[in-house]
Length: 396
Image (cartoon, rainbow, N blue to C red; front, side, top):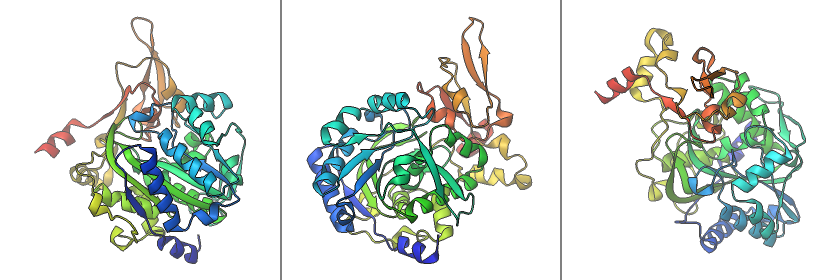
């Protein structure tokens, strides 16, 4: 991305609004004011707008891990009222990218009927194409789902959540879902290091913003804390963030949650000049993060605490793998083997217990700690195992 574009992005304001629950009228008033304040309603008129929600897997909306149906309902109606020619909801969840899989996720997340009633359409076209990224630092092209590839105006409708690998899942991270199906696992395998993975995501965000207008709307009314993006606990935060710069939005979200360290993706955005180094430099036309601060937000068990950071530097990080938290499949494994199919490095094996039941087991020597297994387990059987020595030292 050229310096001029980066500076333009840095100047984009972040609209932070207060919204206590999923009351349609309250959400509509907030979004209407946000789009007018940011001048985005003019970009919608006459366009075929694509909404990219967060539907990582089939999951009830009250659990806080997927896009809430009311957010979609209000947004679709508002976009059509503002003159959008049509509104298409398009997502690529984890796993197989097929019409049947999409239908299951749309229904399981409670959005299928809502989208139709609001006047929008659901995408079932599972084709994809190449998105060029000539200035990319980690990769020069991406495979991206067709609706996003063709869109001139897109809404990045994300959730405010913690994330096992990336610490924060908000604006910039949500666009990883534009990569089709199991190709996301391939990207994890190519970029196993969290810093390199963040660099790849920064390339993707820059490439998507090059030829289309992308507005990020982040639902933090009820998000997720702890072992997100799917294995944590619902957390009512009562906020919605809106910006054309997902890195500015994520930086604001960090301050809102009082995060002690920059998330890898935010740190990459700062390094590249896509956002300021401090949220205090951002323009907030409504509320500021300190006014709506979320107290005691619980980070994932994979968070690198100060104690762990110190231990990881011993002998130049030679023993880092031993001390870092790692995923572990519990005894309550139901043998669905979704984790086996979703593992980028194929390090999860199938074993048979004494009763003849199939179970999954992680071979940790090859594990890259991407936590796809935890994210996509439909029964929450994958936990985060901390090194007991680190836990003891932290308590002392």
